[in-house]
Length: 134
Image (cartoon, rainbow, N blue to C red; front, top):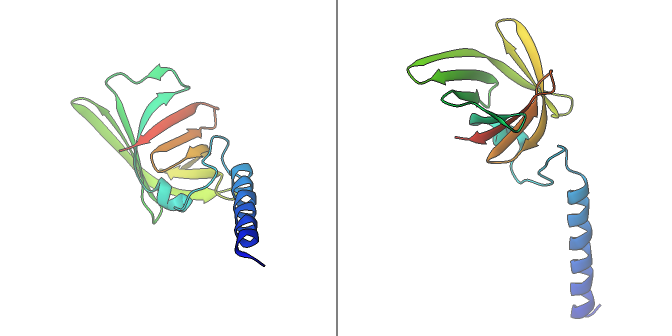
C-alpha cells in the first residue's frame, strides 16, 4: 500500500469516527464529545444564571456545589442574607439524570447540557435551569 492510499484511508477513518461521535451525544444540548468524564465536568461550583431562559434572578445568587465523592451543597445568597443546604448527589439512568438527596427528600434533575463551563438541567416540574461554572 503506498503512502497516498494509506493517508486517504486514515482520513476516511477519521471522518467516520467524527461523524459517529457527533451523532451519539448523550445529552439533548451536547456536547457530542468530551475528553473529561461527566463526573469531572460536573464537579465544582455552578451559578444558576437563568430559569426557563428568561427569569432573571436579580440580586439573588444561587450556587450549586458538586463534589466528586457525592457531597452536594446549594447556597442562596440575597446580598446580606445567605443560607445553605447540604446533601448528596448520584448519577442515575446511565448518567442522564442526577438524583439529589437533602434532609431525606429526593429529587431528580434531567441533564440537558454538561460541558466544562455550562450545565443545563430540567427539574421534576420541567423548569430549565442554565448554570455557568464559577
